[in-house]
Length: 610
Ligand code: C2E
Ligand code: CA
Ligand code: CA
View 1 (cartoon, protein in one colour):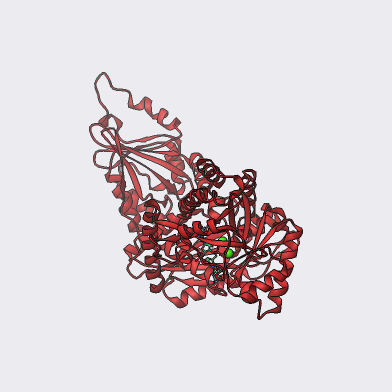
View 2 (spheres, rainbow, N blue to C red):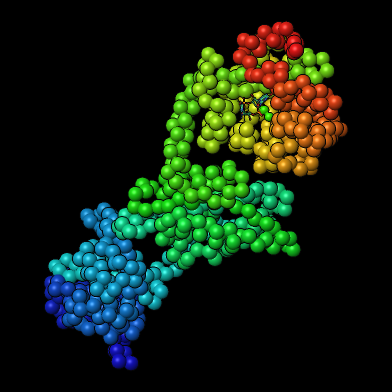
């Protein structure tokens, strides 16, 4: 081999010149075999930055490029030769840690324009690194080894550069990093890494004004139901299959991440127009449309998509994700719509929402909400049996915003939990004073999914019952069927706790949430409320009539009472009576009443309807 002598022993240039000649002289000649015995690769430069020593580990490290190691050669020449041969440098670090007076500081180095860099880029960075001493950094060599490099000043002039092989440690570190930053079920980047990639893309946009990109949030419909019906393992297999298909749609430079549950995110480069976004959404839809086969089952996956386009005017990744979420919510709200692209109209709607969110938060804190009480009537006797509490925003009978609107805002922002707690407290308090007129009176309170899923509602109920000394059956809860379908496991758990308190449970809007009979049987309902949509079509649709009759009969067989809501006319009342419903509620009797009027009604005990 041309440079076989280089690996055999430590090279040194006129050692005696650079060594102290006093009695503390440590013996240059004797230290050389010791340097050779080290596994760390060492390069020593003199005060003029010329190679004065190196050991055999450095020769091994340089491999073929060791032919450039010549004593007396300047460091810059060496760096140039190495960069030209592309032998030594794989990836140079973006930053180095400098040691100065015992403190450590991280500094950025000049960046090459692409990942590998041109020869001159590499030389510039290497020389920039070299100019900082003492310093420590890590680099990936062209041979795939991870090196820890430390440069130290030699007293009296010169430097030592020590390269330690840390490949083993780095592998563990990378493995750990991978575990922390990836989702185990799909192997995709998790939310943290996704947000990091997004931030990286925004930094690139800040440097390059023409650069554009987009993000897409993709949410699988009813992933909880898949998990509930087919088991957790199969649901995980579905997620993994969706992950692979999404990876097939994007380019290698794009990122697909698994954000949580059934939600995936893509960062897509060069997405600049509405058309690009629509094309991308169509590609995703096409990729996901063939059923996924798991254990011989064909599982159909439907998704909703929200797309937001990014460029250098976007402030943060979080803003862009929020915009994409707004678009996603839009896509989910609109029947038949699979993908929505965030636009100016959505931006202004979203801004109104954020404002409303802030105002609602304040209103809840200041207790500026109240309940309207809609009477529930015994269909045979017209006797008042209870009220449904319907939340209103504003005081003195003035309604600031429609409940349908602010309830949705509250649900999206989690304000529904404090709102629900306030509603429960008001209902319990007002009911406690009406019970003197009729001890069997009840008030039903509407609760939403989040209150059941993320919050200990049973505890709030117990505290309301205790505080106002209510009989347990005086408070009822109403939950909508669609809620139950969305979170069956959590709802079942929460309802079991609530049921143990003696509180009655009513399933609301029945017939609209596609709940299975199995679910209806599995949940501890006492009351079933038939949705208004069936009542309003009773006179025109024979189908509605059959549905109302069938639901009523089925509910009775399961031991439930039946309420028909939305009764506006006498013919509807006659029909639900014929169908066998127990209770009725609707504008025919009364709308939601202010608390004082509700109390008067409680004192009278019955309604006079014409
Ligand atoms: P919901 O639980 O289905 O409540 C019945 C809605 O129908 C009420 O609207 C009520 O005013 C209206 N309504 C009653 N009778 C009739 C009728 O004969 N005809 C017609 N066309 N409508 C009738 P409201 O008060 O606007 O409430 C809307 C929804 O807001 C409620 O629907 C419920 O889902 C939700 N909500 C109300 N209060 C609360 C609450 O305290 N917590 C939660 N989570 N949701 C609430
Ligand atoms: Ca209700
Ligand atoms: Ca309802």
